[in-house]
Image (tube, rainbow, N blue to C red; front, side, top):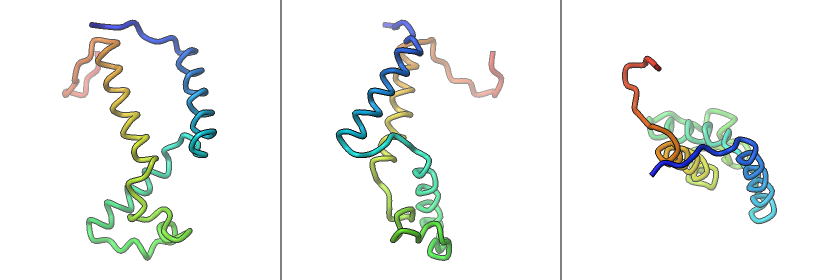
Length: 103
């Protein structure tokens, strides 16, 4: 079963309501930028790189270091990817493009 696409204004309003609810309930703003640096620290740590030599990963008692995952932001990023994939399956003709050429 295919569904109609959502109105972008309604989607934006719902995202705003979700942001307000996130701050009110959990005291956290929606965001994902730090997840990428934390993931880089985790990957570097697993690859054998000493992340302790980088000030960014040791600042604020290791808040951004390899030991800071998993956390709510990582779950948020995974949820965004999984949710957008699921919605794309429900709302549009989904196809995988392997050749790199978009029609």
